[in-house]
Image (cartoon, rainbow, N blue to C red; front, side, top):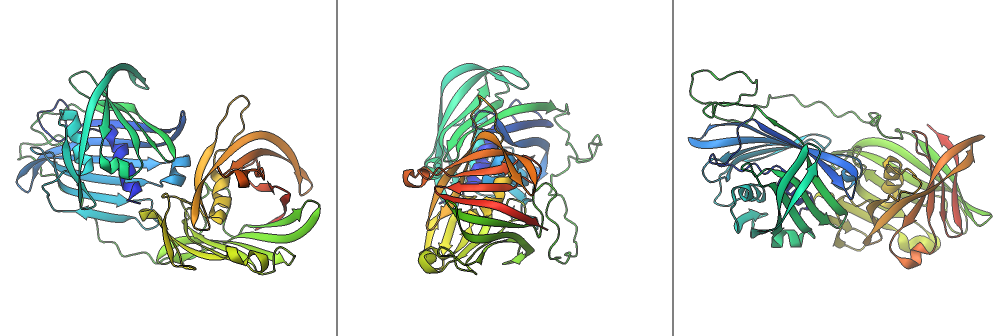
Length: 478
């Protein structure tokens, strides 16, 4: 699988459309914000693009574009993105001269700088050319060349959060999109002289995405001026050369283990859940789930999750366990290990995830295989599930889909709130949301898996059922 996250970011940036040519009808100071919507209504992020300045860069006329992308809710679980970028582009060719990207979604923010001008467009600058009317644009990604073509086949009046626009819909085609499983990539551009992109739609394996304009601001500036970062009016000196913001030298802060988790999460470090597993009416095991510790795992900030059988039975042996290191922000797994004995020994495995590359490696059998970026292990999913907005609403169907690894294959698991029920726990009556779990595998789905999530802030999984098996929460420890 190619770098899906990178391609997804570029597709999100379809909506900015700020092409780098001075003859185009947009001005320095144009700032556009877009909402990212998943399926029909769920807001899952935003994009902010700002044409910040123009001037000279290494003696070449240039434009400076700054943008920020942040994903939230479900999309953050699939594509955790919180990034800023400064892109300096040639005013003449529209090609990138300098790009600085800051990956804020990582535990320690990371920078990637491209400081070499090329003879190829990037996908990003190729898309900018569309606003100018260019077609059959050759661009380069991952050291391979592709062609981006488009055709306008439909005109429509489009309603957005900031008003209605007469637009042309353009359909975009590229073998690059095909390789990444992205289909029906469409952009709606206004029919006026601005040719402003107001909406983008595309389909991926995860579902349908819409990127819709949410606000538009234009700061009026003299065309010969440069908008400085402090927004002061430029003086009579020559135009300022856009340069990357200097980064002060900071002495690295020593890593401190077992720092508290984000207050936004419904669980905390040290939380221990004790479940009783039953087959029909017969108790067969006791399993303990624990948010065990927060430490560096292969140099990255990570949280260790554990699930361990603490009582032997005919099904489980004491000491059998699942273990997963996860990202403390996105909850996406970095590794997963299952050590099982007896009849279940064939399910033992050790998986290393390369989430950025969409790969997983099974060290038990030396197999490497492709996965969607953001694929969960079974254990990380048990905790990520508590962060999903699964709320039952009568007469309204809604679900959340997540990629989950089972052995050496992934499945798209669908969670659907189907009802509300009251369960008794620790001497109290607790209101819960009953969530149906579907895998698309008829043999598995015949077991009619369900989970009961408490409706309070803790979102505790009070009960799981799978066929004749039931897991009931018996005790919570901190």
